[in-house]
Image (cartoon, rainbow, N blue to C red; front, top):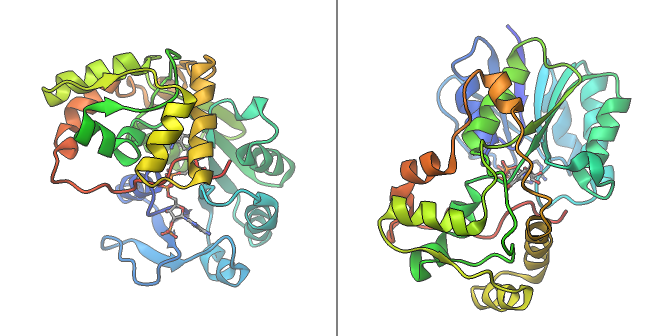
Length: 296
Ligand SMILES: NC(=O)c1ccc[n+]([C@@H]2O[C@H](COP(=O)([O-])OP(=O)(O)OC[C@H]3O[C@@H](n4cnc5c(N)ncnc54)[C@H](OP(=O)(O)O)[C@@H]3O)[C@@H](O)[C@H]2O)c1
């Protein structure tokens, strides 16, 4: 039986990949830095840290395929992720599916692009999943302002974003990790629609049955709000950069790659908001209030 190593296994996409792989005919090894972390029965847990090479050997041993997530906090991939890839390939990992980001091919400064280039130059079968903005950001990053103020505060102007559900990114990843036909392919993994944040607010209002608004805040208003709720400067700047890509109209490309791989339509935002309405109730705590793409 093939062994699949999932990095980022406790994260938004990796956790869903672990769940999906559990139903496939593969041995699943879930990587985390937390030695006390438990995964469901049948999932092997391994302590793994890109920044601690002493953890790599045990994690990579006997692995055939790897789901590779660049942790948001790692900006300098040359010191950690690239050498980890080399170590994995040296011990026989022969398929790597990378969670990349939409537009990575056009931006040489992105850490994801550096990883893509390294994988292309390595002796490994690669697949790149260039994912658009996750719908889960609304829950994991913006939940507080939506719940407490009925407002989405992002400096995205009226630019469009082709939001994708993390569940669909995980489904494409699972296919690429376990099926043939995905070698040396770069997929743009987007949802079915390009939406402005006005449309996102309308979708949330309908699903939550209470008004959610979007007032096109300026960068300065966004920065003030972010400081008020305790976001640190590096995170604030990262978010400002990301939302500026949407403001400039660079985040709205819709692709049918996910639909072709999955043989079904990816989730629409209306379906996602309807399915996640309970998580926007007041009592539910923020799962991950200070994390997005990290320091890219
Ligand atoms: N958010 C978006 O809209 C979006 C869109 C496209 C692409 N992306 C990209 O997706 C990636 C993040 O994926 P995600 O949101 O699924 O992850 P996430 O929820 O941010 O979780 C980060 C994961 O990285 C692990 N991790 C942190 N530091 C680590 C280290 N030093 N060594 C090994 N593992 C470490 C964490 O595991 P432990 O804490 O358990 O060790 C955790 O599982 C980023 O590269 C981001 O740019 C994000």
